[in-house]
Amino acid sequence: MINKCEIEDLELVYEKPKTLTDTPMHYCPGCGHGVINKLIMEVIDELKIQDKTVGVAPVGCAVFEYRYMDIDMIEAPHGRASAVATGVKRVNPDKYVFSYQGDGDLAAIGTSETIHTVNRGENILMLFINNAIYGMTGGQMAPTTLIGQKTSTSPFGRSVKNNGFPLNITELISKLDGAFYVTRHSVHKPNSVRKLKKAIQKSFEYQKENKGTCFIEVISNCPAGWGMTPLKSNEWLEENLIPKYPLGDIKVPTKN
Amino acid sequence: MIRGTIKVDTEICKGCELCITACPQKSLGLSNNINSHGFKYVELIQDNCTGCINCALVCPDSAITVYRQSKNSIKQNKKVTV
Ligand SMILES: Cc1ncc(C[n+]2csc(CCOP(=O)(O)OP(=O)(O)O)c2C)c(N)n1
Ligand code: SF4
Ligand code: SF4
Ligand code: SF4
Ligand SMILES: [Mg+2]
Image 1: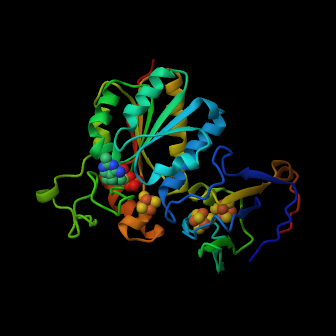
Image 2: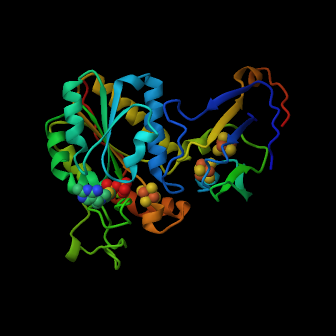
Image 3: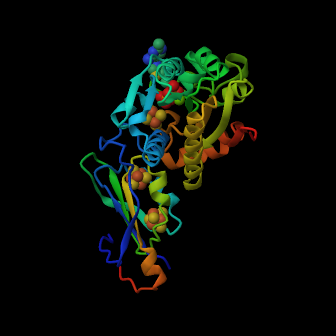
């Protein structure tokens, strides 16, 4: 092992954000949730809004993120995070408020809350972590699960006949007038991480200007639920999920 | 070449290998040792790190801290020893 480094004038260029606690994360090795949690806190650190931010996490693998994010956090019942975030923002209009929801949460049990929150144009950031599966409960099929994808409740692969089509809820809500900024990202490569960080930054800036709902979908992996190594899961994500859920901006604010 | 180095929190690392793939310099590898949680952890296997931070960006457990030769010393083209 190379552990001796005597570079003169070493400069610190990257460290864990200060608002991320030292508590070891409970996520499975290689899980995208960890990267996304970290990025949110990097932005909060840089914008210096630690004491002005409230996060809302519902049920799902990220249910414990209040242990990692050193900000005010509220736990919401399954699917209801955007409704809870609505309430928090309305009584605290000066706070930055975000919800952090999985696909099982935002696109299944919480579909109604999701659509109506965006339709009302609530001035919050909704982060939608789409790993095409119910990670927390043992890898069941989600609305976003791909055709042919094997899960514990679709052991022969999802079929259109039995289970319908994968739900592209992000494109759906982008058509609503309340949606101000809608974009899709991933965290499987260094450059995708950089782009997602910029989108989170922008969303908080828009929120400061009371622009309406910002919605960021993050295509993420679930190595445990998909039954793959972390490296394989990122390859599978690139080859299968991204063609179905293409990365990039879906709705961008018009000038003025 | 710009020189850099990284520090891995070997108790936090879960050996997922995502950083190994993300490193353009192929500077990283898995150790033969395991940490107290039973994970093999990541370490530098070559002294060619440029401090590009790619590994740290993709690390889900924020186990990596990155250092780089200061801008000042790059300008003065100072010799570095690793
Ligand atoms: C009212 C209610 N119904 C069902 C559950 C069980 N449950 C817990 S998490 C979850 C799905 C989580 O999937 P997702 O939102 O995609 O999050 P992930 O774990 O994949 O990140 C379900 C169905 C629950 N906790 N509460
Ligand atoms: S079950 Fe899936 S989503 Fe949940 S922590 Fe493990 S890899 Fe991540
Ligand atoms: S900082 Fe860049 S070059 Fe150095 S180990 Fe990390 S990815 Fe490789
Ligand atoms: S990405 Fe992080 S947790 Fe995964 S092997 Fe590298 S240092 Fe360890
Ligand atoms: Mg999910």
